[in-house]
Image (cartoon, rainbow, N blue to C red):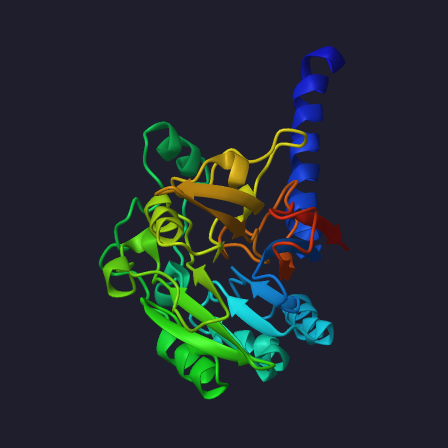
Amino acid sequence: MRARYGVPLGITAAGAAGVVYAAGFEARSFRLRRVTVPVLPPGMRPLRVLQVSDIHMVSGQRKKQRWLQSLAGLRPDFVINTGDNLSDPEGVPEALDALGPLMEFPGAYVFGSNDYYGPKLRNPALYLIEKLQGKHGLNGNAPAVGVVHNPWEDLRDAFDAAGWVGLNNTRGSLKIDGYEIGLTGLDDPHIKRDRYARVAGGPEAGADFSLGVVHAPYIRSLDAFTADGYPLVLAGHTHGGQLCIPFYGALVTNCDLDTERVKGLSRHAAGGNESYLHVSAGCGTNRYTPVRFACPPEVTLLTLVPRDGLHGSHGSPVSRVVR
């Protein structure tokens, strides 16, 4: 009898323990990733950029709110928010409360699909099935009729009132210690809101440095930014794979980006140019799948340095994670 039932019961117990760990501990084990990127023109002083992504705020997530508030102590030069701030139509006040101290710094933002639409209950296995079918989550289509619409206008108005620059299919800039930082952004490619033709043409001639910003790192967007000569593109959306296999990595990215670049810093080539790409693993989850495994939630502090300021003329990135 013990031999007959012992193994199934052991597997069940191990699975239950894994779920408890993934939901109760790792999904709340927030980390700060520090990355050094050699992309600035020679002679320009380093810039510290805090990238916040995929907060997916749900009412009552007090630990996440306190942790995000504490990041103001890093004193970044500016903040880039790469979208999906919400996972609850009632979460706008708490998302803004969490981001309040960071909104005291210069910043810019793009939106993701979860800023516009409320989440739906979905079998996580469908992400893997869709990958095998060549699909990618929503596969570029807006959510079906009847889905809850989030109050994204309230989020936008608060960001704008704080002086953050909206970059949904538009350009903008920030003044940082006399430097002009050019910013070009896209609305979310995951639901086909991106309109690169509106912002095409490459970095502004008068800017000291320019970067591209998008929520979901679809190849068409990365190709466009890179071919146009942007040295750095920031994105989110992937959750770093969210449910990963230890010593292997992510199984899916929920877009057409390869799993090797599901999070962190990498390179992207298109049109004879090469850009650095940083994909944030994000610090939240969909409210209906509140688990992360082998992929802790995180925010990234990127230190941008001159191209000749780190390991020679082309440079090599440096990355580390801090608990």
